[in-house]
Image (tube, rainbow, N blue to C red; front, side, top):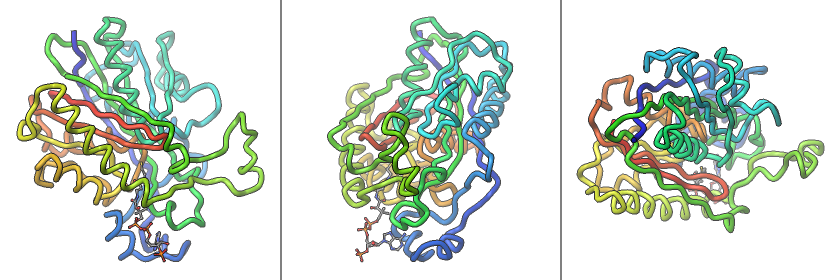
Amino acid sequence: MYARIAGTGSFLPKKILTNADLEKLVDTSDEWIRSRTGIEQRHIVEDGETTTDLAEHASRNAMAAAGVGPGDIDLICVGTTTPDFVFPNVGTLLQSRLGIHGCPAFSLEAACTSFMYALSVADKFVRLGESKCALVVGAETLTRIVDWKDRGTCVLFADGAGAVILQPAEEPGIIATHLHADGKYKDLLLYPDGVSSGFKLVREGKAGVQMKGNEVYKVAVNTLGQLVMETLNANHVRKDQVDWLIPHQANIRIIEAIAKRLEMPMERVIVTINTQGNTSAASVPLALDTGIRDGRIRRGQLLLLEAFGGGFTWGSALIRY
Ligand code: COA
C-alpha cells in the first residue's frame, strides 16, 4: 500500500510587504535583497490573523481539490513552528474549524523542514492502513517571531500555508521520504526562548530569530546537495528522470545550487521565493500547489521535494504525482 496525493491547496495572507517597505524599517535596499536572496515581496499576517487561520484556508482548498469533505478526513498532521497557542495544538484547532471530530490531530515542529516531517509521518499512517484520508499541512506565521530591527533576518521570512490530502493507492504516490537532523548545528539558526525557558527574552523585549546567515548558507547547500543525491540513489532514479524540483524557498542562490547539482534547468524548478519569501514549513506545499494549479505539474510526473531548517533538520520526498 502507498499514499498518493489526491489534492493540494494553499493560502497567503492578503497583506504584502515589499522590499521598499523594508527600506523604511531597516538599513537595507531593494537591490541588496533581490540580488542576495531573490525576494521581491512577501505576504505577512495582519494583527489577529493566526497560523490556524492560514491552515484552515489552505486545507479547505486542498479538500475541494481532492473532492473530500470533513467527514472523510481521518488524520490531521500539521507542521509548524509558530503555533497559535502552547496548546491545544494547531492540528486540533484546525480540526475544530473544519468540523471534524474524533480523528487523531497533532502538530509537529522541525522548523522549515516541518512539512517534510509531517508528510513522512502521514505517509506511514496511510501505508500501514491506519488512515484512508490524511490532511497534511505546513503553516506558519514566522513574521511573528522575527526581530524587525535585524536586517540580516527580517528581510527573509514570511507567512503562508499549504496543504495536501493523502489517500491510499496500489502504486506510489509517495515513493519514499528521507528525513535527517543534526542538533550540533543548534546555534546557527534559532529562536532561543519558549515555555520552559520562561519566555525570558520575550519579557525583556529581546526575542527574535537569530541566524549566522553565511554559515547556514554553506551547510544548507552542502547538505541539500547530498540529500537530493541520497534520495535519487536510494530509489534508483536518475537525475534526468525527475520532472520537477520543488525546493524549500530560503534563498534563490541555494535553489540554483541544488538545481545545478541535479543538472536541472531552472525551467524545471518551481520558484515562489520572489513573491512569497521564506514561509518556512509552508514553502514546499505552497510551491507544490502553485505548480499544480498553474498547470506545470501534471499527473504521472516525478517530483522531488526538499527542505532544510533550524536544528538543523532536513528532508526530502520523491513523489509520482
Ligand atoms: N541589507 C543590506 N545589507 C545587509 C543585509 C540587508 N538586509 N543583511 C546583511 N547585510 C550586510 C551584512 O551586514 C554584511 O555587511 P558587512 O560586509 O559590512 O559586514 C554584508 O551584507 C554581507 O553579509 P553576509 O551575511 O555575508 O551576506 P550573504 O551574501 O551571506 O547573504 C543571507 C546573507 C542571509 C541572504 C545568506 O547568508 C543566506 O541566505 N543564508 C541562508 C539563510 C537561510 O537559508 N536561512 C533559512 C534556512 S531555512
